[in-house]
Length: 181
Length: 414
Image 1 (tube, rainbow over the protein chains, first blue to last red):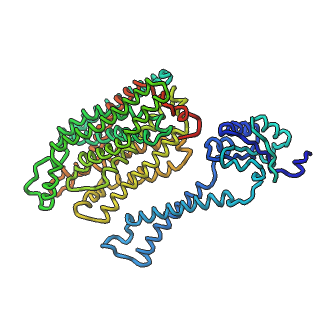
Image 2: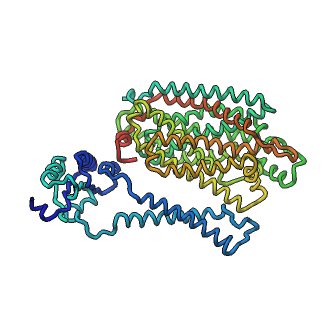
């Protein structure tokens, strides 16, 4: 047992200079059988989330369901208020005059879908997160400006401190750092 | 380098199939017109629908050609040649406008002298509008519209061709810059011309009716049709080299996103028009909708709501579907069909009204509607024949464009 494993580290972090290098490294890491990996970049790199095997999250489903609820809620509210609770005769039109209800139904759809996207994103990404082990890596602050990081977590079934470290170093990382938990 | 992007020989086969289907359409069209009660009127009326359908792709692609110069990005670069070929059909469409001028009396009620037994408000309205709606004005304006569209198309194609002979990146970029500078004001003038053409050719079929959103609605409809057509062409091209290795899921993803956006824009404009006229409920506006909510037009209107908006909207929300060209093309095909249904729903009830004299309301039956489909296929043979002829002339990619490497890279920018 090495010293690091005794301490219980979070994982190993490899640092890269440019997006194509981190994408290539992520593909090789996945190819080597690692599954518990994550990547950090200053801006969205589309192939990166494919390379780390992150296909989809449930946020889009939450947005869809919220949008649907907004549509039904908006339409239902208008039908209930103007034709059931207090029937309103507007210029002799039918009580349920659906064309007039569409704009508000549309707005409610957008409103609830936007809430779903905003709060769904925050909650499902477990934000705000004032502390995360990766913040212990000194150079990690550059993940918001010009550095790309690939992290293999210590709870990966294939994780072995010595092997994983030399594997990541072999991928052309600028630096491989222990992430203290 | 240009030879690397030469059109594949298989495109000739596709062209042959399109022309073949077009010939069958023409045969059906002739049979349909001859067996109808009034061959001349049937011919001109079906011709107008087919013409408005196909010029929708010519004009929509001309608009998108300017939009992709203005906006930049890889999505525009990989479809630029398709857009140029599609808008070049305007040469042919200008000539094919002649039958509409010749058939003006079979198409437009306002082209006849105002009948003395026309009721007072209608009579006044027609007299008032005669300044704009008269045969010579109609023809002169059509010449102006085509001069604007063909002028823009000619210049944009000329500069794009010049770029093919300038391998030096800065010089190649200067041609794109030139096209971009002209596309801004060009798009504005183009939009005005399409708006007025839509008023002249389609909206004026009911001379008493007016809708201020009609021009934008037409442009949105042409956009839906053009993107659907481009998806269709890109799927065909992606089956063969050289485009097989150029077109990637991200390109279909971009086209899918544009398709979704345009479906929403079309639905938004369509509904806005309905809502405003329905709310106003005025005697000169509402009959246009009442006519389309009765008889065979009612189910067709519901089909438009479900198959031109709800279903394509829900399907296009899926990212996986948009990235998969083979599945995306099915939605695009549905939308191409629905564009024709929409045109028939907008135009044909007007011809039915012209045919209904004295109480009895005439409705076009399935056999009569089939002639419209045959006419559209028939004219489509000519249109697609010209399109593929143009597309095969030149490399399928503007290979000297400095943005090419980025546009065709596996990931990254759009």
